[in-house]
Structure formats: C-alpha cells, structure tokens
View 1 (cartoon, rainbow, N blue to C red):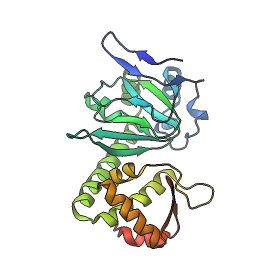
View 2 (cartoon, rainbow, N blue to C red; view 1 turned 90 degrees about the vertical axis):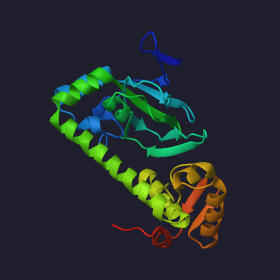
View 3 (tube, rainbow, N blue to C red; view 1 turned 180 degrees about the vertical axis):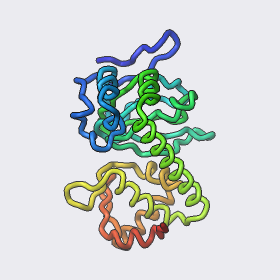
Length: 250
C-alpha cells in the first residue's frame, strides 16, 4: 500500500491506494467530468499522466495550507472540502460528487490550498499533474471555457451563501441545506432517503449554525412531518413543505 507520493525534496502529498487506471472515456462520471470535454489529443495526454487512487472514508486527499501540485477529479464517491476557522472549528465550504474537480483554485492562483479535502465515503479520485493540466488548458479552448464556467458558478454560489447567512433565518437555511444535499447527492432507491450520511455537526456546519440549533430544528421538521430521522439517515417526506420552508427565490 502506498502512503504518500514524493513530489519534491520539500513536499509530500497524501495518497490513497493506487488502482487500475481508468480512461476518461470509461469514467463512471464521464458525462459530467470536465476532462471528458477535452479535445482528442489533449484527452489522451491527460489519460496517460493521470494517477487514480482509492481514499477510504475519513482519509485526507489534500491538506489546507499545502502547496498545489495538480488537480483532482472525483471518479466515484463523495468528498467534503472544509476550512479551519480562527477558533480551529471546521467549516464545510463545498460538497463534492463524482465528476467534480478539486484543487483548481489553488492551482490557478499559485497559492496554497485554502481547504482540506476529506472523503465522506470510500472515493476513487484521479490526480493530474499541474504542468500538464495548465499546458492542456492553454491549448484547449473548450476546456478553458469550461473552467471559466465552473469558476463563475462557484463564485455565484459563494455570493448566495453569504447573502443567505446574513439575511435568512436558520430554519429557512436548514430547509435549503436539505434541498442542496438532495440536489448534490440525490436519493437512495426508496426515493426519499438522502444518498449521503452526514453527522448533525456537519449539517449544522453547512447551515451555518450551532449543532444544538440544527438538532432542535431537525426535530421540529420531523414533528411537522417534513422529514424522518434514523441515525444519520434523513428521509425527505414532504418536499413541498421543505421547499416552502426554504423560501427559495429565483
């Protein structure tokens, strides 16, 4: 088992367990992954240089404060990106699903990672070296445009998050968070259960409130028949009520 990848004499990146290489054409997330939109020869170059690994639940993929040596693409599984606040508390800033990329902001800005990537469940992730990615980005107009679209989308989401934290009551934010998790990870085969297991602390983190407040409001939602709770499982029983409570506006 490989524990780390030596990049230089001064830096070591954490690595998962290497697995058989998967081409972008055969990637489980090929219809949503950005690299599958690259031109033929560029796609071949990415395929040749990629290193794919499996990260176990709870394992760190990259660490806040570390130098960026490449970009990561999630082939399968779920990942959270979290930032450590001034008081040392975790703040989840993004949930990542299959087909999403990570680490691109630090790579493009030349700065260190501002967040830590942690597997929420066993995840298969591909790593593409920095020089190759930047080289392909310069040559491939379609890929460059897709990166701009992704950055613009992330900026818009960050602006909305700031606005909602400042203006929306916690109850509305919790309902909106449940809808966001549903949109990100979908539902299990029963058509009701959120397809991810998050602790009450993680949910509170996403909402932007204290864990005690999140627990109390989840209990209220349960009593009102909007959701059902079973450990970390959350079933969405009344989507209309959840949407109404979230007070979403276009």
